[in-house]
Image (tube, rainbow, N blue to C red; front, side):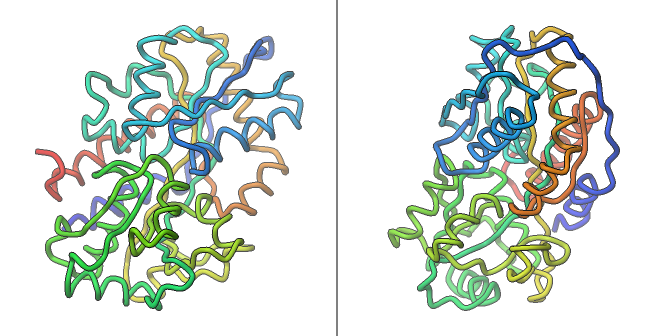
Length: 328
């Protein structure tokens, strides 16, 4: 139904070149990162890991303050930045494919992507579909068969809103498996992957859709079992144990880019300074190790190149959403 568009989206995440700006004189006085979800999800990971790594490498002088501002699939944070903190030079905000998805679908009422400045990416985080460790569902096909036979028997939890990126990943897998009416699939939205996994462990839902970085801690604790990684091939390192959807005969790919935006009124000096700092961090051996440990794939974009990438992503997701009836 939307396979050609999906492949176009996936191609955007491969082979991108960097565009790095320089602003050696800028140092944030009180660096702050907003994670637009509750603790434990991918946006929270993005803020905390980047903040720590930046300080460890001397790219910022003070500890990055992380503020969790959940609500509206990131919409509460977006509105806060646009309406109240538009000229804050010390502020960056964690973003991802979930952000561009919501923007593409008009889910941030009155707001659009051009009201903020897009800084840089820090990699791509592949999607996963998982169940509780004690679930009777053995593999991805078992889950999809249950959904195909009785769509009401399976509820899937994710950390993005209905029609958001976590939801779309399930629809991509279901469509690839031949489920005709993907709109019948029961998806339940929570504010962040951590809360979604909590509901899975409580037995309120039967499966979880999120990203590798969100699932990592719960896999290590033995709480959940990954049925499939939505990557073209198996990931390296700690994640080599997880089968891909493709290995199981389901041609589904879902790569969640991760990066940052800044207030639209941020000064050029501050903007270029943040772009340079994130670019320097991304190029470091230390960050490459963080990426490998957390199952992130390369995506190296800064400044204007990242702005263009997000614009293309919004356009492509808007097309997908129309094709599956999420928007008109």
